[in-house]
Length: 233
Image (cartoon, rainbow, N blue to C red):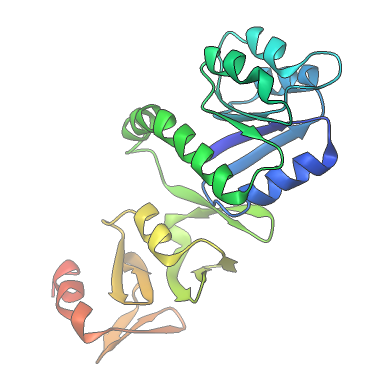
């Protein structure tokens, strides 16, 4: 997840960025604020990876605000004024989006930020490999923490993915393939084009079906041999 902060004095502008972020599951909006001083308090209190920053704001403009930061996150400027582009890139901004900007242009800017963040994120991930026991999934405007040990299975449902845990069912816009990339391969096994299961939660196997608690999951023929091999059969 990339923790984001939106800073813009216009509620409509914040709403557009929030909506665009909703299309990218890796973006976690930590907070939104209408001026730079509020943003400074948030940056002091929380880890922020990516800052969506307007330039023309009351009290302190975006360029001046960025100059006050010692530990600067990655920054994407969002503004209606193109004359500040040189100043923005002098401050090592990832990108400079001129309002109104499209979702496509927004995604390109976020990808640039991801490229810069990736080495740092890899270092953090490698240092925590033995500690990680969960992931966060965005659904219905909320972020759900899912412990691997509580996750039973996941199922592809068109453009959505259904995740079944011991105590809830979550329907997320995250693609099935994106979820598979996040789940640890040593714990989860794909048994069908549309199903991946937690091997520690298997109750029994019968024919081309695997039973996980009260749930029945099909085993596709082209996944069967790999599945049986991975569970030692």
